[in-house]
Image 1 (cartoon, rainbow, N blue to C red):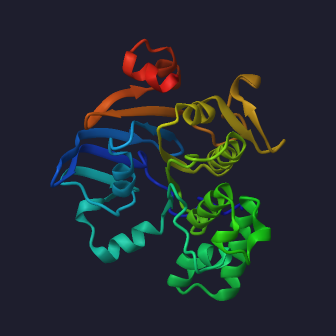
Image 2 (cartoon, helix red, strand yellow; image 1 turned 180 degrees about the vertical axis):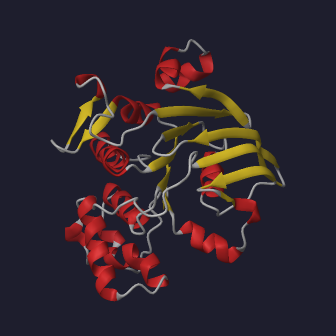
Length: 278
């Protein structure tokens, strides 16, 4: 998968939220949120249900515009883009939905190929690219399967394959391990590590599972041994890879309650933050 994330590389920072407000009839969900995600960085968006994590991902993907404030992704101001421009922009963003969001009536191959067919890519190219991304998630044997024949973890991996089909420089993950058993969750985390450390993909990952964030912060994928390795083993997670730092943003009551490094949140004595450590 040597060409993954080589097209449309972002200017730093890859994602910028500046004083973003968004809400609905029942009230504001986000109130003045500001943060940045640098190129090749992984930002873990942590928070309880209903704190606006998924809304943040939708704004970063150009699926939703804020009521006020600025969202700039890959140099594009989301609120200033036309619908045609947004359609082109979304091709540069991979989105892994929490439940997979696969089309039940389509095979795995057709689900993964859906966006390429919309773009009228030649069928011979579609076939090779679908096989490429399914090999990446180790599901090439499921080409002719339907979603009903897949386990929950396999559906999530097909969703990742579909998100990668356009070789995006940014991938957005909405609770990618939610509802999965520990072994399957580790498989998903390993895929995310591979994308970050081998292909330099920038990631914004929403979750309520602090352990997922720590796994991304404390380990890296070694392309030579093809294994996940604890960072301390070689003293430099970035050596020979494109690995970048992992940071945390914690939402609470419509705003950012905490923003910082893994060590800061792990050692915090704040009662609210400690709830995520339990």
